[in-house]
Length: 508
Ligand SMILES: Nc1ncnc2c1ncn2[C@@H]1O[C@H](COP(=O)(O)OP(=O)(O)OP(=O)(O)O)[C@@H](O)[C@H]1O
Ligand SMILES: [Mg+2]
Image (tube, rainbow, N blue to C red; front, side):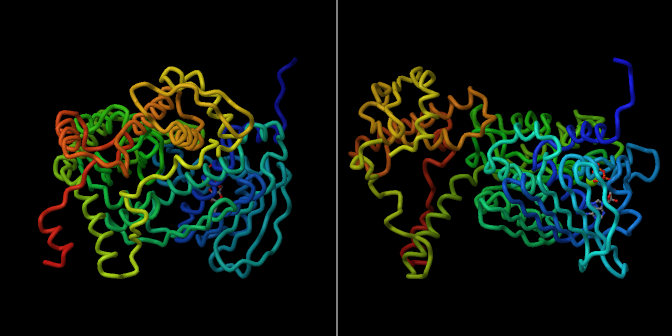
């Protein structure tokens, strides 16, 4: 074939291949645009995992008519004023996102520039651009994307279930919301109830408040603040205590100059900082905000702008390790008392007769009544998932076989577990397997299996112990490294000070 210039529509679709991988990548681009436009409130909604509809509304600066027409063209951006690709202070800089989205979906942008008499709207359908028309909108910009990949149906096949795509969207919005506590966010879809994160105060308290909103109040209660600065580079953030960990590094959120990134450097530095506190298979949860001069970091190294390259990675790494180690040494001993505080809070709510959520029937001392309901109530997909793991499970001494659509037969259980409730074990495993991230490497999956089994071999709530057994258990805990937490990262004991006990009995 002779060499020829490709038609523009094809060029755009090829470019879209890099920018738009799945609904979450569209949401990322649109929310980044809203942030670059100075929005203080951003609302995100999706339908059908984003495949059917994605809508991002902002109250930012909007666009005048001429900009709106240009914005959907390739290489058209308001964000690079000179020719210096190292002076980037905005999330966007390529002028690629909107034309790429318009090339593979039905894109509609409605926008009102401050001071304009009314709003304007433009549509791009699989690359075909409409004229600009007047529209109604009070302020800011609303971008709607329908029928993603209708123009490139082959790419639809690479999408996962609506639920997985919705989760990926949620993860992107979570990251962007963590990066900017000063901006209010809301997220709505069919899978979960809508969430709203109110704008928080500037500075560390606001940042922690937003992290608590997004990562959960548990993180907030179990995080220590860290900070270090050297040669114009600073690292700041909140790191989970060593008892607050996960089985993978997905709970680690790095940001560089307010841009959410993925970063191997961070994972390595975190591992080094926590080395004395954690077994290798546990990963801390943390959010790291790195701030460097724009010339010290290259953000133009990844098609989705989600990786960066530091000019001096050694400095950033050393700074981070130092900051984390210092914070852990300062605050590390707090681990077990967090549980104690929660315990006391639970007792207090019951004791004071207030409407607290302490419920004795749910307290840890309730015997687990699983043995009664036999006949293995597994879903057909659970069974399929478990049976597909059968070969791996045998390595651990658990021999199962599929037995019709909703049942498995347990032929053998691992000897070290002794007289274990096979049904509860299998059901627990099924639950874990269902929650696994599709991208989890096999090794990690097996760690989960081993952890679940170990857990079933342990002394469980409701079992009566003889004093001799209790003493032996405590002596073993003293000898066992990292016995302060179980293999799910939960503390194995909580510390109640005498004063706490006195308080429980209204003596203080
Ligand atoms: N929500 C918005 N509010 C105001 N202006 C916007 C908005 N979204 C896009 N724009 C304008 O449209 C232009 C093109 O947006 P687009 O996302 O395609 O490129 P970019 O943000 O400049 O670079 P990148 O491709 O890296 O995202 C932007 O430079 C901006 O001027
Ligand atoms: Mg952009």
